[in-house]
Image 1 (tube, one colour):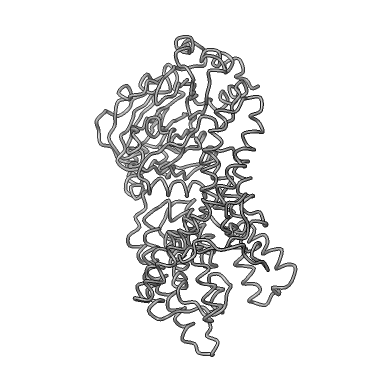
Image 2: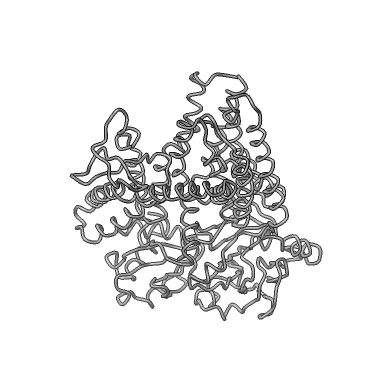
Amino acid sequence: MGKYQKLAEEIVKNVGGKDNVAGLVHCITRLRFTLKDEGIARDEALKDMEGVVTVMKSGGQYQVVIGNHVPEVFEDVMQLLDLKEEAGTEEKKSGKFLDRSIDVVSGIFQPILGIMAACGMLKGLNTLFVTLGLYGADCGGYLIINAAGDALFTFLPLFLGYTAAKKFGLKPMLGLAVGAAMCYPGIQAGTLSAGAEPLYNILNGTMFSSPVYINFFGIPVISVDYTGTVIPVILAVWFASKCEKLFSKYIPDLVKFFFVPMLTLLVTLPVSVIFLGPVATFGSTLISEFTLAIRSFSPMLAGGIVGLTWQILVIFGMHWGFIPVYINNVMTLGYDNVMMPFFACTFATSAVVLAIFFKTKDKKLKEMAIPNFISGIFGVTEPAIYGILLPLKKPFIISCIAGGIGGAFYGQFNFRKFILGGMGIFELPNMMNPDGTMGNILVAFAGIVISMIVGFVLTMIFYKEADSSDEMGITAAREGVKPDSVDGETYIYSPLKGETIKLEDVKDEAFSSGLLGKGVAIMPEEGVLYAPADGTISALFPTGHAIGMTMDNGTELLMHVGMDTVQLEGKGFYMFTAVGERVKRGQKLLEFDMKLIQEAGYSLVTPVLAVNTGENDEVVPVESAKQIQVGDELIRVQ
C-alpha cells in the first residue's frame, strides 16, 4: 500500500465497503465509483474527511473528488477492492455511427502506429538493398531483417487482439489469445487446402461459393486466411467482450478466475471462424465483384472507384477481398489490371503526408510525417492512414480524391502488373511488360507523378491546421501583453477561443465551489487547446480530457475540457503532448471533437484553474460573458 492507505481505507468504508463497489475508474481529479447501492454510501462522512474535496453524483457514478493526486489514491483504493483497473469501463455509444466506427478503428491502431511505421520502413529498406545488390534475397541477413519487418503484418491479429481488448473492455490477455488463435496455422485456408481435396462446397451458384475442409461437430467451417487481416479479429474481440461480461455475471466467484476466460474462448473462436470471419470475407468479395462489374462498363470509372475507396477499404481490412482477383488474374491472364489502380493511393497518401510536414507547425506531427512518408513510398500506408490522415480527417479525404484521380488515369490507360510481389516503388520492376515495350512502365511513372502532385497541391491549398489561431493570436499576445510573470504577479493566457463564464456558474460543484482551484471557465468555439503559459506538463489523463501543467514560477494549472467527458474514454480527443514535456505558451496541447462531445450529451464548458494559490493570493479572472481569443489575458494572480 502507498502513502494514502488510511485515506483509501476510509473511502472504501464510507462508500459502503468493497462489496458495494461494482467498478472504479478515475479522472484527473476524482475517483468515479460505480456502486451497487448508492443509498448506503455516507456522503457527509466522505465530505468531512481530510483529503476529500467533495462528493458528487453524476452520470450513474458516485464521484469522490480528491484533487491532482487522485492517481496515487486510486492505486491504494484498488488494492482494497476485488477489481481490475478495466472494471467499470464500458464502451459508451455516442455520436454518429461513422464517427464511432472511425474512432474505434483509430483507437485500436493508435498503440501500434510507431512499430507499424518502423516495420514498414524495414521491409522497404530491405528490398531496396537487395535491388541495389548489397546482398541477395536468399541470404540469412535478408531473411532475419524481413522477419523483423514482416512479423507485425503477418501476425497483425495478435496485436489487434490486444489493443481491441483494451478498447472494448476485455481483459487484454484474452484479446491476445483470441488473436493468436485466429493466426493458428492449422485453421488457415492456405494450410487446409495444401494438397487436400475439400469435403464439399457450400453456397454453390453464388459469388460466395466456398470449399469446406473441416467442420465443427458437423457445422461447416469456411476456411479463411486470417493472418494479416483486420476486421475478423476486431469482430471476434468485440464478441468476446460481450461473452466475458455475460459469464462474469453468472459464474460463481470461486471458479470465475479460470472459468470465465475458458468459456469466453470456447464460445468466441467457433463463432468467429464459423460466422464472423466468413461474413467479413464475404463483404470483401462483394466489393471486388462490384468493381469487376463496373470495369466491364468503364475502365476509367472502375479505376477511379478503386483509387477513391482503397484507403477506406484498408481502414476496415476489406481490401483483402481484391487479393484473390489480383492473384487469379496474374496466374491466368499473365497480368492484373483490376486491382492495380490502387497503386496510385500509395503515392497520393505519401504526398499528402509530405505536404503536412511542410505546412504544419506541430512538432509531433512533423516527427511522424517523415517516417510515414518513407513507409508510404515503400508501400506501407497504414501508419500514415491511422496515425495522421484519419485523425485529421480532411487530409484523409484529400488522399482519397488524389488516389481516385490517379486510379482513373491508370484505369483509362490499362495499367497492368505482370509479376506478383513487391511493395510501393519496389513493385515497378514487376510492371515491365514481358515483351520489352516501355509503355506500361511509363504509365506507372505518369500515374505516380499525377497522384503525388494532386495530393500535395490539394493539401497545401485546402488543409488549414487547427492551430491557425496560434499564428494570429499567440504571436499578437506575445507582442502585446505582459510575460507570464512580472514583479510577483502571474499572468495566465487563454488556451481557447470562446466566451468566458464565471467559475461559480459551472454546473459541477467541484469546480464551481472553487475547491479544486480558482479561475474561470470558457465555452470554446474551436476544438483546440493551447498552452496558457510557459512550463512543464505535470499531468495528462490517458483519455486526453484534462491537462495539468506547472508554470516556470511554480504556479500549477488545470485545464478540464468539458464536464464528465472522461466518460468518452478518449473518443474525440487527440493529444499532442506528454507528461514531463517542456511547452511554450501557445503550443498546441490537445484537439477535441466538439460535435462528438455535444452529440454524446456532454457540456463543452472548460474550466481553467490555478490550483495551488495561497490564502493571500488574489486570483483575478477576466470578466464573464466576454469573447476571448487564444493568447488573450485570462487570469492574473497577485
